[in-house]
Length: 133
Image (cartoon, rainbow, N blue to C red; front, side):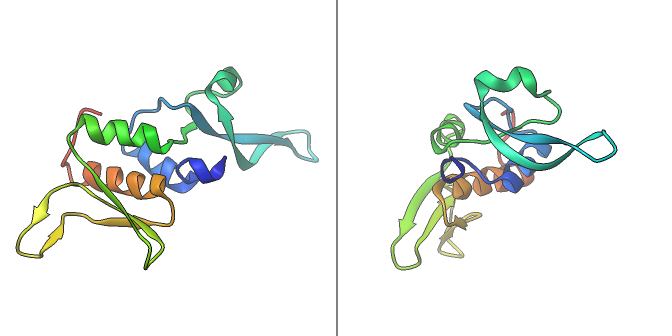
């Protein structure tokens, strides 16, 4: 499943920036019991939204699918996605062409399409290019 959703670290950053926490899947911390009998979290796993009653909203993090990120970008009129077979990377831009640089504004790249889209969403939020998500 990890190959189909945004990475844990990117998902955490998107949550901190205020990205919507509504997704088909979520990253959830897996509780462990220590030798002293106290519980702690030492790893994360992906869970379907139907299992969320076991995890509080404060600790779970949306693990966005490509389609979910695409819908967010589409609703804002943003996003150009392409794959470079030469570099083996996915590219995403905010859709604004910078004539001076002859490049798209905020071009982001990643090994996976969902992380390229997630990085673009992160860039757009950080640079206040979109709001109200």
